[in-house]
Each structure stands twice: as structure tokens, then as C-alpha cells.
Image (cartoon, rainbow, N blue to C red):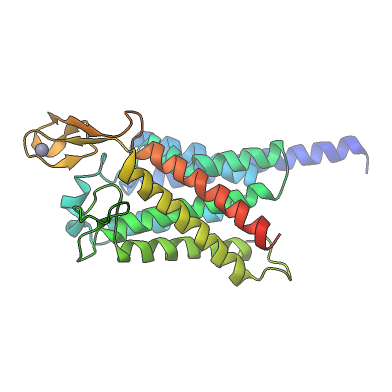
Length: 287
Ligand SMILES: [Zn+2]
């Protein structure tokens, strides 16, 4: 085949994939907005992340992202009323905004861009590790708050209120492992990371589950140590909110943490950690 023609064919596939990526991501962003899982800015963030992942990673990567998004949104509406008081503790309630979507999908989107700039199988591995981590973290948050027992702080073991950053429960930890396992199991099925004779699908799923759970634990560790925390002077409860919404937007007071280390930054760092841990584990044991 004439090399010029080949070049144009590649370009055509890229443009086609970009078009499909934008269309699908817009549909998902719009659906998330309509279902009240995303705010307007969150729909934009989801569209940006989805477009990068569909267009540069391909449809198989896109399916993994949809698996994360659909399962996480589903769980956030699960037993919604029981979680109402707890969700007030979280900074923004459960409609995800642009910062939350970038914090959850940003590392995955970067991996997709990198796979085009510097082609290597490592980006696929890192991508699955990042998605496994954010899935683990979201499942742990959404299901862990339903635990009958009070969470314990991951650092000191001290009992803390449900929803308190850095608090872990057995239920939440199990949910984290399961969420990462689902993503890790889907990755070889979708051939994002091909199962070889060296590594069966089961081995890959387990390694990704360990990576995702580790990433989620990094999230809890940062949440218990350096994440910013405020106290509401009106009701004395600890919150991530700069103004306490439940107390007519009373300005809160600084308790501890690094000023810029909010929940979104912690999420981004932990998904980066999960991506790195997945790469190290897979290259150490199976690749
Ligand atoms: Zn208050």
C-alpha cells in the first residue's frame, strides 16, 4: 500500500474515533446531568474525560470508564435516604462537579493521551490501575457509610463519625476490593491488558484488585493526615465544607490539613498511586 494512503487511513480512524468519543461522552454527560449524578460543570468534565479516553484509548477503554461511572452512580442512589445525613459531611453532596470528575477521571485521561504520544502497553496497565482505584474508592464511600459499626481512623484506629475522611470500615474495605476486582476482571476480558499464558485473567484481576485497594488506602491515609478539615462553630461538627450548608452557610474554622489538599486533590493523588502500583505489580509479576 502507498505509505501516504496508509497515513491517511490512520488519520481517518483517529478522527472517526474522536467523533464517536465526543458523541458517546456527551450522551453520558447529559444522562448524568439529567439523573442528577452530575452538575452542569460535572457534565462538562465527564465529557472531556470521556472524549479523551474513548478517542485516544479506544472503545475498550471507554467501556471500562462506563463501568466505573454506571456502578458508582448506581450505588450513590442506593439507600439514598439512609445516607442523607452522612452526605452533608462531604464537601459537595453527591452531584459531581467538574473538579470531582477530573479528580476521578483525570489520570485515566492522561494515560489515554500518553498512549498516543509515547505508545507502550504500560499506559493500559496504568489506566486500569487508576480506574480500579477510583471505583474502589467510590464503592467504599457509597457502601461503607451504610456500615452499622462506626468507622475507625486508618492511622490511629480511633472511632470517628461516618463520612469522616480517613475513616475505614470492614464493609467499605470489602466494597473497595470488590469494585477494584470488577474493573480488574473486565480489563483482560476487554483485552485492554491481554491475558497471556503467563498471566490468566484471574491473576490479572487479582493484581488489579490489590492495586485498586492500595490506591483507595492511600486515599484514606491522606484523608486521615493531610486533607483539609474544618469545624463548624455553630454545631461543632467536623466538615469538608468551607461554609456549613446545614447551618445556613456558617463560615467554618480551620482544624488541620494542607490548605489546597481537598478531597479532589486527594482523589487525584490516590488514583495516580493506584496507576503506579498496578504498573509495578504487573511488570514485577506477569509482564
Ligand atoms: Zn454546622
